[in-house]
Image 1 (cartoon, rainbow, N blue to C red):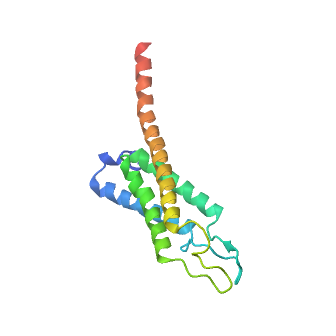
Image 2 (cartoon, rainbow, N blue to C red; image 1 turned 60 degrees about the vertical axis):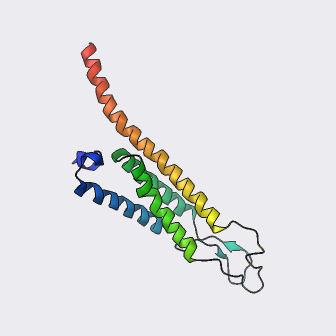
Image 3 (cartoon, helix red, strand yellow; image 1 turned 45 degrees about the vertical axis):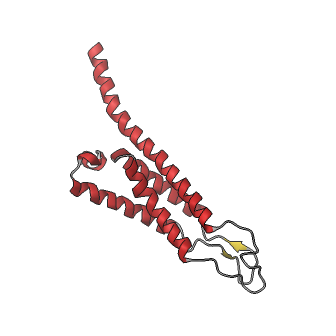
Length: 166
């Protein structure tokens, strides 16, 4: 059973390989949807208030990062180097793009400055930098997972050679 859950996907039949990959993409999408709100734009702190509050919480971002890193380590341990990037990083990036794209900036409420007058970060820049951070974290976690796989195989070889020398 351990070989089936932790063994390389390249050695498994395609009927196990592809559903596992699809499950990984679904889990990364579900993690994003559970940890972050659908509308990522800043909202007025209270009706008529000129100050804005973000709907994103530190707990949500931390939970998303931990879940995505765990998925990346798992798929890095089991699959080729590019697959965890496609399975773990792309679904949250696509969902974030959809969230930003489907909720365009709204004009300011009466008594507040228009968004064009207020300097801020455009959503495209926020999306691109977030995608870059997610992808870099996934690649680092994937390399850690691959290192764990390589160490498990090499440590057994070292024990066999040590026994032969004595």
